[in-house]
Length: 99
Image 1 (tube, rainbow, N blue to C red):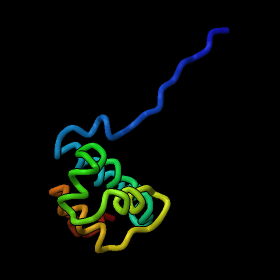
Image 2 (tube, helix red, strand yellow; image 1 turned 45 degrees about the horizontal axis):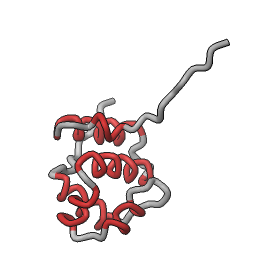
Image 3 (cartoon, rainbow, N blue to C red; image 1 turned 90 degrees about the vertical axis):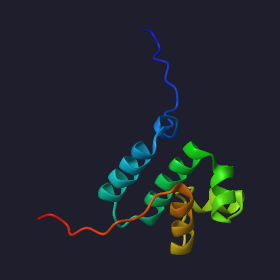
Image 4 (tube, helix red, strand yellow; image 1 turned 180 degrees about the vertical axis):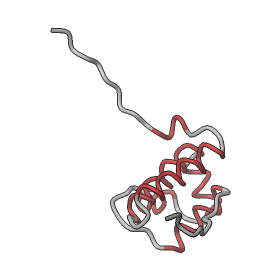
């Protein structure tokens, strides 16, 4: 029997454009709208795609703080999320859910 060789999948490698990043974050928000850690992880994926050090510098947060907050292992503060979104050039938008 032959062994199947797999490689780890990293979504950050596929987030190349601002549109890709916005679509990914929107999909994550639709998938788990009340899971702050999941959304933080999605923001972390986008930040890694853009360059974590660059986002840290733009957001005013340390790289270490940013990595911890966006790891998906904790719920980041709203202040952190808003700073990261601003640094990424993204924003949240409120919509009325469709029935």
